[in-house]
Length: 269
Image (cartoon, rainbow, N blue to C red; front, side, top):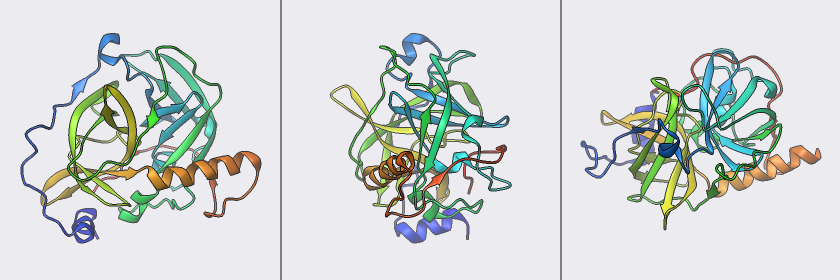
């Protein structure tokens, strides 16, 4: 079943045919001034061929999508040392470069090359960097509450035609909100997987969701995102368990430790 049809069946809704008038255009962050406040969003280099987007939520912790860490063709997991995080990557330079020492996916996540909605629900991963990033100009983002249908959010991401600098869409909309999946009007493409979805309150941006996939509903392009409230708490527990060598009650923790990556890192309907 194609993702578009599965999505319609799940949500039982008809989305408006036209984009909301208050959806902002995507703007490239080409200069240091443009990027100020957003440099904790970075480009994840995956092996020799692929990339995704990730965001610092701690000095040594990057939040991204779990499916980014798998080879689309083989389903094999990347070795952590094949993953690099380029914080604030812009036009050939980054604010900070780090390798990854450990990567843990959500315990309920099961990789499949097929387009499946249940894959979106737990499509989260935490990456531990080899060293913390401690720069006054590069502060990790806080995590905020899950937005509701009708709320305004924003997204900062890299993508296939804008891979050399991040782009920001300051305002887009939550078209539908469910505990397992958010449907957004935000503009995403290949490489945007793992991108942080932000809510800005009193001038302070917090991460409220993570981009998992793009899809179509009634011929309209939408983004699918993972609500963070419950899934991130489970992932954090699994991450802590993997450090101590204990096993989470939530299920098997996937600690990425093998294989070589390549190919596209974004779900396509």
